[in-house]
Amino acid sequence: MDRIRRLGVKGDEALLVTSALVFHGSLLAVLHRLTTSPGDTGIFPGSPHYTEPVSTYAIRIFGDPVLRQRAAEIENVDGRLAHLVQDMIETMYEAPGVGLAAPQIGVERRLFVYDVGDDEGPKAIVNPVISESRGEWEFEEGCLSVPGLHWTIVRPKEVHLTGFDIDGNEISIEADEYLARVFQHELDHLDGVLLLDRLDKDTRKEAMRTLRGRVFSGAEVRGGAQPGALERDTPAL
Image: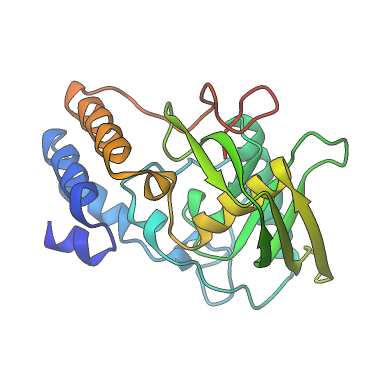
């Protein structure tokens, strides 16, 4: 339990992770995987050699400590980053989702991809920052890292987002409603924040009961689409 807390997982979440690992008899093996350095992906300078491309990644699920860490700024926009972006886009489509942040595949870097179905195709934003927000907008929101659950969340209606594209060009986007929602959700992931943190106390308790029930029933939970989540039909983020 102490080791899990040191990884950034706290409170009920730490208890849930510990219970799950003990219940399924795989504590040491899973802790070894969870404590692997982000550099071990082979994506960034100084990490082990970059191996053959992987078309899709496993999406990290609630309880994985990587989802609770603030992702680091990206210093080099290069071919390796472009390759990672392509793999993230394929992973997002396979889920299916409309957005995917790098920490959701275990890469602790400030990067996300998205495709809101506006005929412009998929896009990636490096080192994104929301500098302004206005208004309020209520929307039913789900998450690839908390599969099968969704809640009505109130967030700002409009945001001004800046960052860089994968060619290193500065970008500035004024986003409204749905697109603004996608940006805010993905920025949360880069800051180690999950939808559960946006819930009121009673709703969060109910969500934790549901998640504990899955653990002790032995139900297999995978990242993927959920009814009511942010979607074109309903893919999640």
